[in-house]
Length: 207
Image (cartoon, rainbow, N blue to C red; front, side):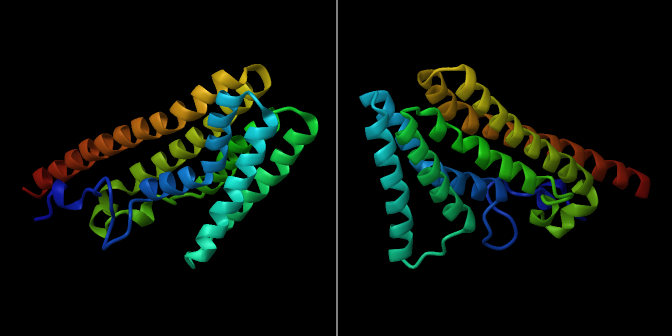
C-alpha cells in the first residue's frame, strides 16, 4: 500500500532529476534581480545614482554576455530583465532619481504572479501517485503563491513611492526570500498533514 512518505513531494525535487518549481523560481529570480541588488549595494555605499545605476546596467549586460559565452539558454524573462534595467536605469540617470530602477522588482513580481494565476499550475510538478490526494491542495497553494507575488510587488511599489532608498534596500534584501521560505514551509507541512489524514481515512474505510 502507498504511504504518505512515498507520495508526498520532496521539498527540493520532483520526479526524475527535475528541480522543485519553487527552488527553480528562486534561482532565476535571484539571477533576475542580480542587477537590482547590485544597484542597492552600490547606492548604499556611494549614495550616487550615477555610479549605482551605471554599474547596475553594466552588470545586466555582462550577465547576458556571460550566459551567451557559455552557450547557456537565455530565458525571455532574462531579456526582459535586461531591458528593464536599461530602460529604468536610463530613466534614473536622466531624472537623477533612483526610484525608476527601484520599480523593476514590482514589474517582475507582477509578471510572475500573473503566470501563477493559471489554474493548477503547481499540480504538474507533483508525483502522479500524490495527485489523487493533493490535487486540490496544490491548486489552492498555487493561488496563494500568486498572491504572495502580487503582495511583494505592491509593497515594493509602496516603498518606492512613500519610502526611502535605505528602507527599500532592507525590504528587497529580506522580505522576498523570507516570505517564500515561510510559505514553502507552510505548504509542505500542510500538504503532509492533509494527505496523511486522507490516506488514513481511506485505509479505515477500506477496512
